[in-house]
Picture 1 (cartoon, rainbow, N blue to C red):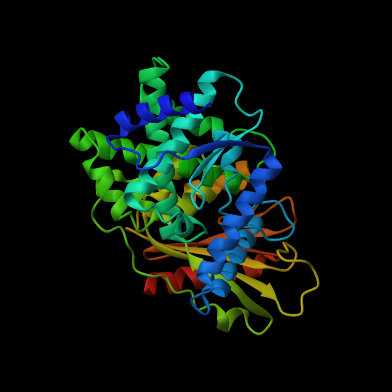
Picture 2 (picture 1 turned 90 degrees about the horizontal axis):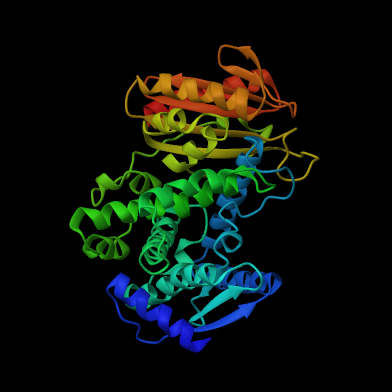
Length: 404
């Protein structure tokens, strides 16, 4: 195998314009062995966070809040909260890069042909090559925060773009790189038992990420801008979704929801976090057609999500029968409210098979309610176990988000 890996590595070096300092070793593992590697890397990342007091608790609170909110939104199945950032990428690319041990892992029996193996090796070897030159800080690409999501999409984007170039040059795939990458959007989002939230994260990493890299590469006909981006990645998911904005800042004014006067003491705040453009897009596109969801999400200029739990509640976390979730978005202008409203209609009807109760309130099949309300330059979507509560939470969040 060593000679074959060396040949693929030399090709990756030529495509990427970099040289390996040390060629990583390649091992073949079973899926359960890879899962143990993933847990080890996750634990190491958490241990690194633990060096700063409070960061682990904040991280875990944000992850629980996001997975709880996505459960209320119908994007994740009910049950124990999970790490919503886990994309199951190994099932898609057939391999992984163990950055702590500088080794490429191939998953046994995933690749069916030699061409499959070469594509997987090209992808994972790109991770190793770039890590040697740019110190990719893989640990900081874990989690649900905006910076982590953008960094992860950039890292996976460069590897996917190089593997696609490898596919064309050495495996003689005649389709253009852009068509091949964009064509994966429907494949990754299709059917199966994978929760929609996981699919949305995977599409962002393996489609939007490489399309971002391709745009930067084409802009200067080379790797100069991509190399610069690896040193200074976009700070938000909006930066990945809109490559023409880079290297301009794509930050936003924070949205403050001030829901405590409405919900406490009957509920307590279980977690909160920044809601990025990709978070809004992932929610709306679970029911709305891509073009409608993308048009609506394009109005994003800042946002926040929150999960509130019933004080002394009796059901496990997350709980559709007791929890309240809300996402509030600051918008570019008042006209964006129409796009958000249209997309929410499709999400509620097609994505949740909901029953419309009022102009902006729906009842879903699981017995919960969803409502959307608007401020002058904002929109808020709330999920709650009661119709009135969903409307009240959405209305207050929208007003507060408009005030900043």
